[in-house]
Amino acid sequence: MSLVSRLVARLLDLPPADTHDIVIERDLKVVMPDRVTLLTDHYAPRGRPGLPTILVRSPYGRAGLFGALFGAPFAERGFQVVIQSCRGTFGSGGYLDPFATERADGLATLAWLREQPWYSGELATVGPSYLGFVQWAIAAEAGPDLKAMVPQVTTADFRGETYAGESFTLDTALAWTYMMANQEKSPLQVIASNLRSKSTLRRVFAQLPLSEADARAIGKTSPFYQQWLAHNAPGDAYWPSRGFRDKVAQVTAPVHLIGGLYDIFLPWQLDDYAALRAAGRAPYLTIGPWVHTSSGLVRASAKESLIWLQAHLLGDRRALREAPVRVFVTGAEAWRDFSEWPPPGAKPERWYLGAGGILAASPPLASPPTRYRYDPADPTPAVAGPSLYGRSGVADNRALESRPDVLTFTSEPLRRDREVIGPVTAELHVRSSLAHTDFFARLCDVPPSGKSINVCDALVRVRPDSPALEADGSLKLALALWPAAHRFRRGHRLRLQISSGAHPRFARNPGTGEPLGTAIRLVAADQSVYHDPEHPSAVVLSVVD
Image (cartoon, rainbow, N blue to C red; front, side, top):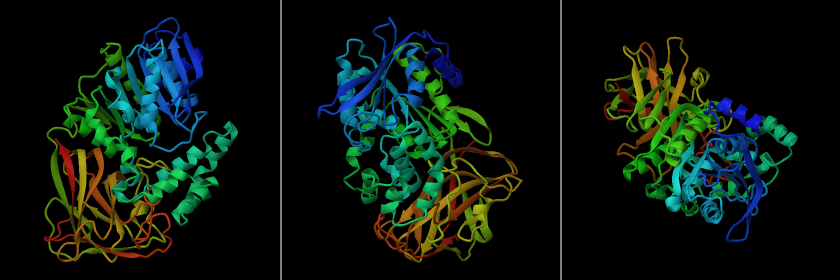
C-alpha cells in the first residue's frame, strides 16, 4: 500500500504524507432502513483516533481508481476515509436506480457513522461526477457534522445535462449505460468491452428507434435508460425527487466547486455556484481547461480538495488561495483570479450576423436570410466540445464547416486581443419549415492558419409551443452557450457556426414530434437564419478588459 500510495501522491503532486501506516477495514456492512446492505471500506491512520472523516459514495467501486485517489492518499494526510458502493453496485444490495435513492442512502450512512466509536462528528465529502451528485443529495440535511465539501465536474440536478437544450444527450446517456453494464465483469472482460465501446456505440448511435439502443449496445434492456427516454418532457414528475437544485441554497458548509471548460456539467455547476452566492454563501470555484475525464482534472482536483479539507477540518489554511474564483483562460494559456463569477467588470459585446457570412460589430443591413437544409437521415455530426463519448474538448472544425448544412459567420481579423470570460449567448432570428426542429450554435476562434477551433456551443430544441412565433412567422431564440474563458488574439477572427444538430452528442430531431424513444420517421427541415435590421441575429460575448 505504501508503494502504491507514494506513486499516486507523486502523480497527483500531493504534499508529504503524515504517515504511511494505514489500517483498512474492507466490506463493512452498512444496513439501510429497508434492510438493503451497502458495502463500505474504512481507511484510517493507525493509532490516531478522532480524525475527521471524508465520505465518498460511488457507483464505480471502492477499490481501483477511487480507492487509489481518495483512500490511502487522504488517510495518510490526516483524515479517515469511508468509501461506500452505491446501491446495486460492487456488492451492495438492491438495484441501481440512478439519483433516486442517494438522499435516503446517504443520510442512513451518516446515521451509521454517528454510531461508530472512531467517528469524531466532523464530516467532509468529495468526489467527481456521480460522486459529486451524492454530496448534494445529503448536504442540506447533514447538519453541523458537514464541515466542507468538494463537488467536482458535477451538479445537484442531472436533468439539465440529460436534456440539454430540451434535446436528449444521447452520447452521454448511452455511453454511461454501456459503462455501467460492463464495469463489474472480470478485468479481461472490462478491457475487452472498453476496446470495443467506440465501435459498438458508433453503430448503435446510427440506428432508430432509440428505445432499442440499450439492447443493441449491452444485450439487454436498461430500466433507467428507458425511463430517461420516457420522462423527457419539461416538468415531468420523474425528476423532482431525483434532483437537489432547490436544496443548494440551504447548504451552509463551505463548498469548493471544481469544473472544466469542456465538461458536460459546467453550465449547471455554475447554477449551483450562483444559488450559493444568492444565499449569501462564499463558495470557491475553480474552472480548468478540462473535459470530464481529463487526467489534468484528476490531478488538480485531488490537490485542491486536500487543500480545502485541510483548511476547513484541520485548521491548516497555509495553502488556501486568497481569490475565491480561479479560471484558466485558453488562448492566453494562463490562470486568472477573480472575486466572483462572472468576473466583475465583464461587459457584453455584440457581434452581428450579416449577409455573405460576415460577423461584425455594427448592426446588419437589409438582406435576405441565409438558408440551409437539415436532413436527420444524414445528421450534422458532433465535433469535439463537451462530450462523454469519443473526442471531446477542442478540434479543427473546418471539415464540419464544409458541410452544406452548416452556416458560418466570420469577422475580420481582430485589431486587439479580447478575453471572453463569462456567459456567451447566441440571439438568433430563425425560421423553419417544421414545427419540431433544433438549432445549434458554436463560437470558434480562427487563427491566421485558417483552423477553426471551437470555444463554446449549445443546442436548443424547438417545439410548437416554445418559443412563440413573431408576427412575421420567425422565431427569436436565445441560446445560452457553454460559459467561456478564452482569449481571442489580435489577428484572429471570431466565427459563429449555425446548424441544426450535433449527433450523437444530441439525439437527432426527426422533425415529426413523435415520442423520443419510438420515433423512426425522419423529415428534412428547410431552415432560414435572418440578419437584417428587423431581425438582428448576434452573438453576445462577455469581454473582460
